[in-house]
Image (spheres, rainbow, N blue to C red):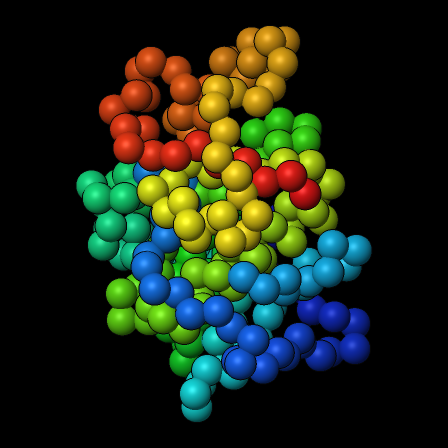
Length: 221
């Protein structure tokens, strides 16, 4: 689920890591209304806005989304809409732009993902999508790693994901869960939310069609 504009290290440098460290992504990772390795930042460090890695002759950059990225984010979502992602309209994406990070190569957005805060200690990884032409180069992994890093910066203790891509998220440390891992009091408060993703987390009956076939997973940070 911050400003849409990036902030940089005080010394003007960005973080660079060898492409040899990247893990190849074999499948697009995502799930309806949310998601689709390598720790980009250590848990103790604030998440920087830009992560730069060599990618052949081009650089792969993971950065905070800007409003100008929204049409490209929608394009990525539309590729998988009705399959492993729910369709999202432009106004919904503009409203949530501060939650999104994008992967960019040669000034082209090739991937996206979002971190949505659900409760004081709980967040959700949402809407992870990678352009089919860019699969296999680690963009999905880098996006999820960045979202995990940002969650730590926000002092979240747990991250939830509802996904078809169990193996992908298991490699990030997510584990399958049953039920809703909150107290009855928190459950009642969260029921006040109008957010569809919160309803899916709570496993409310009216969003059951959205969640069929998905696996509920949780990561402790």
